[in-house]
Length: 384
Image 1: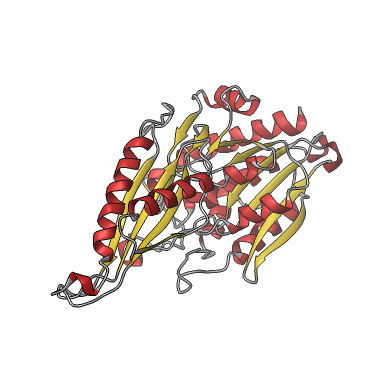
Image 2: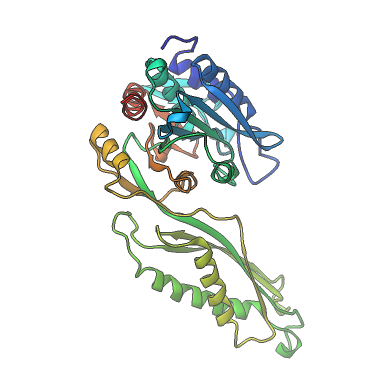
C-alpha cells in the first residue's frame, strides 16, 4: 500500500509530543484530541473511514475501518491514547520529546501505549488494501488510565465489524489471554463523638472499624481458597490500603474510613463481590447498634478477563510468537471488547515494567518484530 505516512519513529515522536494525560484529578486531566486527530489524518491517508465518537467535550474515541464492512468478521487493533501523569523532576529527558539512548526510545506513553498505533499503521501500509476480504478496524480510546469511559462507551455502542481483537498493551510481544479484575472501595463507620472521659457520651467508630477489619481479614483468608494457577498470585487479593479516623485522643472517635483494593479472578462478578463486602461489614457491626456503615466504590470497577486457552486467536498468537499465552495482574480494556463478542488477546511491544514511571522506554529492537507480527495477524484475519 502506498500512502503519505511518516516513518514509525516519526509517528511515535509525534504521538509522544501530544500531551494526553487522563487523571481523576481535574488539575492534571488533559484532552486526547491532539493524539486522535494525528491518528485520524494518517489513517485517512491509508484509506480508512474515520468516525470520531465524543466521550466528553474534550475527549473522543476514534474508530477507523478499512475493507468490506459487509463481510463482517475481521480484526480489531485496539489501544488507548492517554497516559498517566508524570514526575517532571525525575525524568532524565523531556517526556514529550522522543529521545534514544543505548537502543531505547524514551518518552511518556511510548510503551504504554502510543507506539503500538505507529507500528500498526506501518504494518497496514505494507499491505495491499484492495486485497482485504474482511474488514480491519483500528480503535483508539480515551481515559483507559482513569475511568475507562472510552471503552465503556464502545461496549455500549458497538463497533462496525470485527470478530477478533488485539489490544496492543506492552507485553514484550507475548500473548496474554487472562487478567484480574479490580475493585477499589471505601468502607466508612459512622458513630457519635463525645468526651473521652465517659464512653456512654458517644459511639466509637474506631472500635467498630476494628471489628470490620477483623472480618475483612477473615474474608481475605476465605478468598485465598479460590485459585487459578495461571496467575503468579493465583488467588484473589484484598489489600487494606489506607485508614483515617478521629481527630483527638480526648474525643470519642465519630468517624473512621478505610480504603481497600480487591483483585478478582475471572468468573468473579464485581457486583456480587461488592454485595459480599457490604454483608461482611454490616455483620461485623451488629454488636454496635449505635454505629452506621457506608460502603462505596471509588470507581466503577474493572471486570476480570479471560479468553479460552483453545480459542483460535490464542492458538494463532502462540504460533506466531513462539510463546504460550499467559495471565497478568494488570487490567486492560479487554473485558469491554470481549463483551461485544470479540475474541481478544493482549499483545504488544514494550514491557509493563516500564509503564507508569519516569524514563519510560521502548526497546528499538522490538519495533520491526512488532510490525511483522501485526502484518501477519492482519493477513491472516483480513486477507486470508
